[in-house]
Image (cartoon, rainbow, N blue to C red; front, side, top):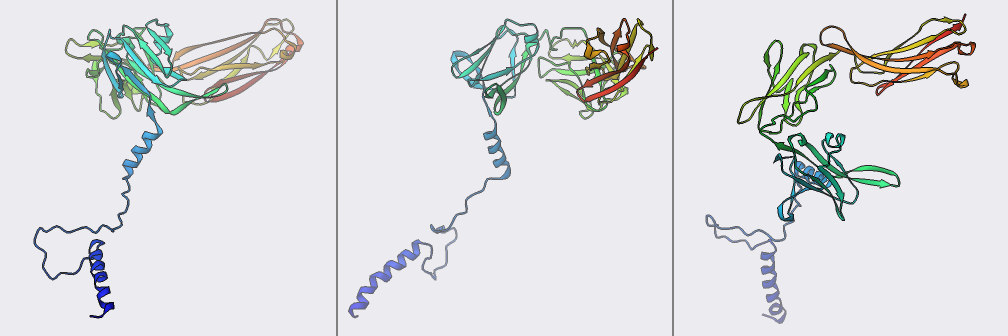
Length: 376
């Protein structure tokens, strides 16, 4: 061997060993033994694993909305809240909502009666809600959220909210108590109707019954469904559902009966007010008493607001305006709300002659009607 051959031998040996390690092993004629492990090349490019669509969606949703609501347990421990929580009536409840500008929502009757058992206090880093000596009537949804404010304008931060529905169980009160013994439920053909016989025990078996003829109303899970947090839901109400009904609940004891619900079918569709106007006379003499009536027929549970424009308005002519409404039945179980606004001119003068305009407005829009009164 000459000097150059001697110098190259070690290099060839090293390069062969490197080739074997970087994934190009020297070919061997020896057959592979069964079960013999294969060595994975270390220089193989591994494609980053892309999370599945559902995994990505869940990750994104967790970033979009984070629950800030917790329950304070014994000895100062905090517990994250699930969608529902069951507590025994009589227990006290303490909730915390993280943040410095927090708004709470809870069963409305606690505000209606200004219940002293409820207290809300802003702490350093959270808001505290305490409900003492809970009752079955406290059953409902408790939620909180952060407010984002810019000057006097505030809006809800949809990414930082918390909510839970709490059942305050009471074997003596299977249904959430209500202020009265009778309640009207309007059946609109274009939206679901809810019979609000909510329970305090989520495991209670609840059935729906018609008072006359006495029979149980079948709950098929499609057209009529039961939700312990809402009550019985009629997905597609019809006039056949009208009548008086009640709910019955059973849970490890004698069955209990709810209050009665009067189901009234609404025949007036949604939309701007359907208004008419009429004057007591189209021609009035001086010193006459003039009455102009604006009438609206509409849904029983939709309020109507009235505004007037009349000839002597800019001269501040004295008029008397009275608004009122009542429910009228058009056949058994068919109900309409009649709303009226009456404008009265007690001492008609020449300046009172002209157009009387009534503007009736509800949440769906407004309707304008007018009538003309002339001087005799």
